[in-house]
Image (cartoon, rainbow, N blue to C red):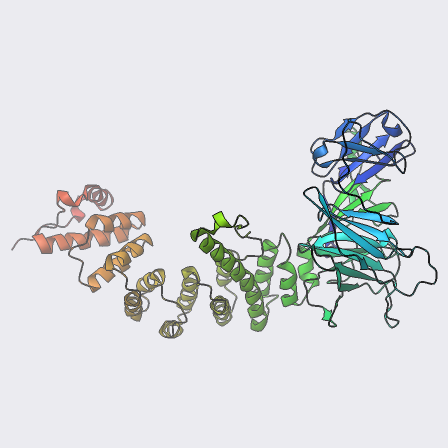
Length: 609
């Protein structure tokens, strides 16, 4: 398989630590995401490393026996070491105060640092779970809930192992994930992952079931809000997205893997050592090794090889593995780093080789604009609340975060549509249909269409001499009125004479001041169009010659400059009987430039009667 077939990979820069051996014990702290390598009970050194730590922490401890567990408090302020089943030692002398206690028979516990929730396994079978939530130094007891075991247990010994339970935050909500090795229904083969939603208030509810359709040894990760299930026997993984549509039976939604099972991308372990020795080729890493230990949300540790990796999702390969463009968009819009991949999908579906049908293109545009509109509405609500002075009364008022899923008009214009309209081999009817489809979608979501999109439509129509279609689009207001659009129409007069009147009608509808129209045209270097417009309304005797000559010079088109200069010479002759400019017009530099380019003899001579 090529690299483009793998949609999961281990991070490029793993945490490297001394591998586990008889004298070196390795521990992992899930809250700080740190690996502790403890040599000889700490007497010959403890090295602490984490993915975010630039500099590892090293220290020594007295060897007071075997270390069972070792952790830092948050921000590495206090070290705690456990050497027996009942004692925890804080190397720095501290006073501890009992805040709250609970009397419960516990089989095992699990802590989720992201959610600050501890889960206790209670009862003989172990399948009644009691959660507690920690916040600001207080501990709250949440309602307990029962995990449905695959079948009625035959014995009364512990049935639910902590190996089959994980806790993770998915789409901002805390879930308990239960790996059920056999389905409860007799007609269904294979294991499944059952998701229980654990809210801060209210009862825990079973909400999703992920169908694995196989049995064996599994491990779970959560990456970018996707549940990743690793299968050791086949050395492959699958991903599930609980936001994608599944089969709902009234209480629970059933999901199947988003994509076919694939291995994690092969990984090469660089050979460490002095420079001359490291020229050896890197060693392939044994993926899905029995020595791998998986931690939430996205950590894989190989204690035998001495590596900690973060698991990552690669989006680009998924584009070709998920042919349904609508479902692909639903999937990509939920991913963190999705913008450039989404834009590449849009370009791809408009390419000659992979051209999608118009209904598919419309679906994609609608999905993008749905997200775009949500963001615009949130931004508007925030601005209104701010203006109403609610920020003082409501400290929770936060500016909406613009995620990569917000693909706005400038993104589409720059990366997709402007490039697409330049393609020579594309049928122009298809090009116009696509542009109009995007505009239709924006209008449907009541998003104001930016003038550059209308300009793109007009330029495409003009390029293919489709003036009748342009006329219809303007007549039926398919293209919304705007000053830039009116100016573009004015500039088209030499190709299509009716454009002049269409433009003036539009400007009248917009109640635009004439001098403003001239300014807009000049700013777009449409100097002749500006002059034609001002002549059309009879204002050419009062305009500033210098303003027009400045604009003509900026275009670096000498013949245009000549035309404009000559026009004003003729105006001077007509109004004052002399073609020369008066000092009050401040045109000296333009006269000098004209002489330099065209010579003194090109200046108009006064006509005498």
